[in-house]
Amino acid sequence: MGKTKEEKKSKAASEQMGMEQEAMASKSQTSPGAVKVPGNEECDCCPDAPGCEWTDNPESTQRYTYFEKLDPFYPFVFNTKTNISKLGENEMRITFMGSVIPMNMRKTQQEMSIFVEVGWDEETQTPMDQFIFDCGSGVSTNYNAMNVNLGRMNKVFINHLHGDHMSDLTHMYCFGPSQGRTSPLYVFGPTRSGITTPDYMGTPGQDYDDGTRAFCQNLRKACRWHTESFSFQTTMYDGYPTQEDIQSAWGLKELPVPVEDDPWGDSYAMVPVELDWKKGGTAYDNADTGVKITYFPVIHARKGSLGYKLEWKTPRGEILSMIYTSDTKPEYNCVRQAINQRKGVDVFIHEMIVPAQIWTMKMAHMNKLPDLDSAGVKWMAMVQNSSHSPQGGFGYLLSLIKPRPRLTVATHFPVADDTVACAMKSIREHCDVHQGKQHPGYGKNAARITWSTDLMVIKVTKEEIVELRGEINDYEFGATVVVPNKTPIPAKYHDAEDNSGDPFAQIDRSTEIPSCYTEGNHCKCNYRPDGY
Figure 1 (tube, rainbow, N blue to C red):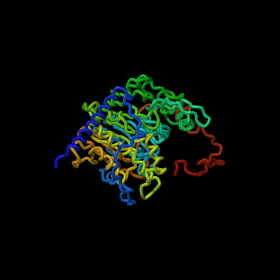
Figure 2 (cartoon, rainbow, N blue to C red):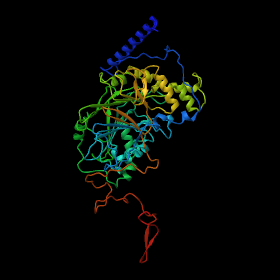
Figure 3 (tube, helix red, strand yellow):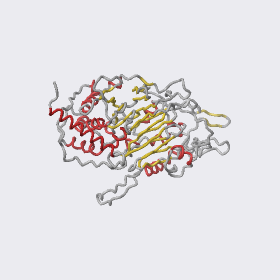
Figure 4 (cartoon, rainbow, N blue to C red):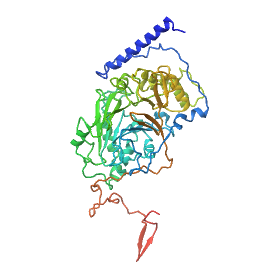
């Protein structure tokens, strides 16, 4: 049956609106702040739509079937000298080490962190380059299980300074030198917000220094006892590039300078690289590895939140691209970056949360949806309005991105069969999508989408994008430590005679129970000194 005039008119109006929205995103290329979006607090013109049905069936609430059925990825292999699973020469690999919003942490999902590796260096048997984006609480366990030792973690890109995006940085920083990190820890993140606080409860308003440099400086001070106590171990090696060399090699706008007093090149040096969130720009541009990382402002909780775009020129000259927006409300900078001057992107990773009503039901362990005007729903809606993209907003944002990303990944989301099914329903109100490699025919321009969970691995080449499931050992002892093939500089606390590390330099041994002791002419054994 043919469409009525009213239906045709409605479709034309919808297409016109889509063109206008795309034009707004395009205009924002001149300046991140060029698009003025009117407040929508008093506007509620959207029609009601059917919600989702909920049950207490553990088959849908306690498992994520799609992930369970993915082919396995084995992080430990024995055909490389480093035990690292080899990447293809022209392959980018993205691993979700954390994937959920902080109030919904559970055994299967820790707070946010993704690990990106590109290419393969045959000489070192390691990736050509590698990066951490965010490092929330609990993710160190997953890095360990996925055979990414702390020595490989030297470049961390923080999207914003919420605790669920930076709390495991303490662990990575403190224990990195013990697992072979041979360089300072570089922390990329936003400059200060520039917000002056209001007067509050008798305390005058202040302009806090809440940027990445201040964060690193305070973290470095807080970790002083740890770093000194471990500095009988090697923390420096001969031949580390100069500050000028690093600035040139990585395309940094300013000379990299450690906070506090650590010598340049020491692996306990912490080097902040502040990024002007107001302007956007290039954070990292390495001609040797072909990786360029740019950043742009997003809307989340407070001024100063960033999204990142990684572009890698492969050895055969192709460009592979990934966007990680981290937490954000639906906004046009993400759309513009994903359109990418009509070139599109390979992988678009963007946050999503469940609607406030569902969030409240799940958090309160209810068996049915609460009223929309209940206190709990209103509170959750307030959090959502400050910071996040609900599943319907995510769907609308995705509908604006043309060409579609080769793979769109919803993250920061508490996955289970029921929540994913409900989110899929909301997204399909706005655009055709399908989950999985095989296109089931939801439309000519259907977008491939997936929902991330911890240990999901995405292998990206120009030929294909493959989702895999990390196959780990729950009792894994540790990631393989790659012993540095460099000349060590004597430790800060060392034996003056042979320059070896001195583990006794900072302790009082007067009450120690010795393994062996001398009594007269005889040696007495309390316990074996070899540990057995």
